[in-house]
Length: 292
Image (cartoon, rainbow, N blue to C red; front, side):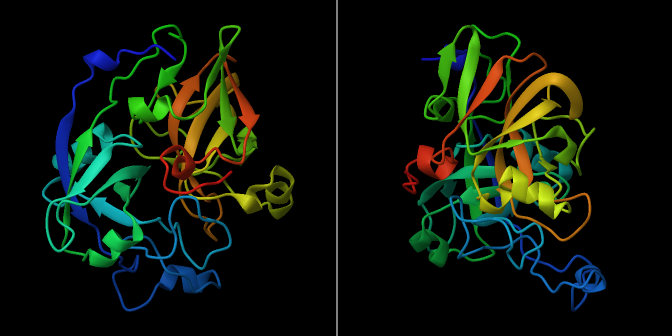
């Protein structure tokens, strides 16, 4: 088992609520999408029919977020804590409405709208309304890997780390992933700091490259390897660097954008290798969908 500082990590509750789906222009229709020739649903609200483990490419959705979209509306600092301290795999509990007491977990952190995406089982999603509130037990901020000081953990629940099938070999971590993404495909969000919240996008305008890399099979929740990408304290190209992330939102028709990746592990040195495994998805690792 990978040794960590798990005993030193505080567990703190933060609260948010459903962030409703709205058109980007605040009007009666999505003018931006009509201008580029597509009529699509945008992000936010409760998505009933797409969740982690499901396809995220080719949908009639604009940066479509799986499951439940949430944020803290009280003030920017509170939403900052909600997004920063929450980690992928953290437990979340419904604290209002008909689904009060039901639990799920965090699946993504979307930079820009500053959304936190949440998984709940289908029965619970049917009970939720856009007025409901959630309590996240944040745990994982400050996680370090004791024997790998040059590999940094980001946005990662410490228990999820041990469920991802990671192997240790010759001073490196061998991580199961579904895809390996060339550095040239990373777009919107590059250069943004910090990497302890939010995401950045895999550009999908080059359809031939998308097909070559196999991104047409990409799913919400897939664990992917980003080649020559350093996410230590910002997002940048760096030869030899490797980052591991999770797919947190869907594709887009906008140039420079595409499926979003929240970072889980990163190193400026070639200390992380990827092993292709179709099961490498948080839905499988967290036991909600068998992807064997």
